[in-house]
View: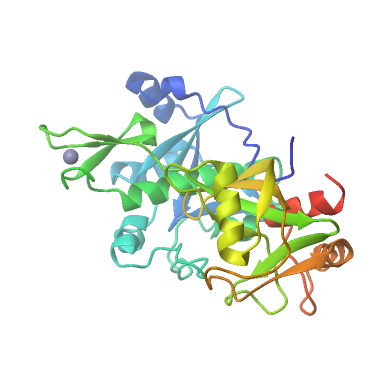
Length: 330
Ligand SMILES: [Zn+2]
């Protein structure tokens, strides 16, 4: 099953066999052919134009930031060339500083922090734009590269210290690991990916959608929730629908997944066969949850750009895609 998910389909070969090969990495870092994508406050550098693209720069352009110790990640290979991401945020606007100040960009309902300061570098090459804002306009899986860079840089910013002993940790494996610097601990820590189930429960010709109080008026979406430790995907789907709607779910079908770098989720899209209809939420997480007919859902998909009337999220959201799949008889 393939789905046109934004943030999926990276054109890079992650080439993880080179992540521990420091001689190879150093040679690639000095290779004038290698390509660097700068990030400023978790926003990637985008070259504008009718078709915006990632603004890759040669190593010489980011040398200053490399010398200053900007977090640097090996993203992968394409056409034989090494691709890196580098954080060029000033100290007071770095993801780490913002995380410490409580300005993390990922609190519910808050999509982004303040815009980059006027002194953001590389003005001639492009503009630093929030990943989610630009993602739908990028071609060929480029948004997946932004997701990879954003999620990893954010993870490093939030995990500067060992969670076992509290000592400062340092980056390893070209960005895919952190190791505690305490000689008697040396714990290794790896980047997180948090599984989230998102499901369209359906029964006959009806599907179940809900809205959070923070949504714009008229916007409804599929129900969703994190998979908890010791729980299968199917169990998480059934639990979330029961908790948020009071509806009983039987068979669960997996549709597709989507990386969602806010900060590190993997959205697992499912269709869920409901076995009851009465709405009786066990918790008040949602402002409203209700059944919609297939025709209503079809109209809400078509109206995603609208400002009035009921509507579903934009096509870049997996909620849109799994609802579309159900409407079309998947
Ligand atoms: Zn430690």
